Amino acid sequence: MEQVGISGMTGDLYITRVRPMGEAATSLTVHDGRIVAYGEAGPPGVEAIDGGDAILIPGLVEAHTHLDKTLLGMGWYRNEVGPRLIDKIENERAEKKRLGIDPARQSARQAILSVSHGSTAIRSHVDVDTEVGLSGIEGVLRTSEAFRDVVDIEIVAFPQSGMLIRPGTVELMEGALRLGAHVVGGLDPSAIDRDPKGHLDVIFDLAERFGVPVDIHLHEPAELGAFSMELIIERTRALGMQGQVTISHAFCLGMADQDYVAGLIDALAEAKVHILTTAPAPRPAPPVKRLLEAGVVVAAGSDGVRDTWGPYGNADMLERAVLVGLRNNFRRDDEVALALDTCTNGGARLMGLEDYGLAPGCKADLVLLDGETLAEAVVSRAPRRIVIKGGRVVARNGQSLIEIA
Image (cartoon, rainbow, N blue to C red; front, side, top):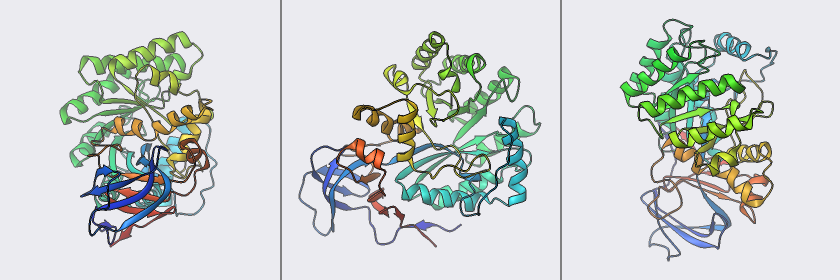
């Protein structure tokens, strides 16, 4: 894949009539890819863009997806997969070869779609197993490099098929990190590998040796998931990795025993372990407002987008904010803003994005939304008027401006 570019842009912008987070209209000056000032006259030689009273927000953050295995652009996949997690895992492993899923091509397709919807940063879990080897990592690394001026892509080495139960996977995980994966991933230490101590020994050892964060899929329900969560929290404390560990899905936080959940939330906050939710419809889900009130970082993601697991998803983080709001019964305007926050600031904190936001000095990763209020902009999900990455316009009116050489 060749370098991706945006023609005719320099990283300098002057935008009139924008409303930061829905507040009063002002102008915005961007120089060399960063926000310089609000409310000043336009600098000489920089073309003015009329913001049309659009709402200005920082770039949306897709904090959990699987770029390597989307089926976007490959035609419709007839899904007849069994209901269990292991059914989906085993079916996907077989279908990757049968369908000829090219991780570089498919990750590029989803990245372009994400950019058109306003995402300026993506964390992607990429499969590592003894059948695909490191091909997924290599493919998404190519996309990450080609798209570096358009969207930040962070890669998680992810043992989707299990790690200890498939000999050779641990060595491949190490190989993925040597290639350039940014995060070490894990999966259901008790339910899949059936050895929580051994699984976490490997994950946290890799994290310590390579100096990378941890992001563990935890689908395990109720008390089983809580047990694994407690072990993860203990490791985080013991190794001084506060702020560097994420638990994705965390279905156990939606279990019926809310006294138990309250203790888990306190422990997560104390250890600075982040929570990622996809706001699932059929499974218990983390209580976003309670977690935020406790000081836990909460982010959101699309998970799979049109893949062998399911036919849903369009990589739109405004839609994901709506799903977070619906799943948590958010109705007030300030609650809708909380849902959006999981798709902006929460994702940025989880990924450790530097200089993120709307303040002068921050990187000019920005989105202009149509809507009278922030809540209306979220629930209406109109095509993004303008998407800006590093001071360069990368999408207009819901259409990507990406050019692939």
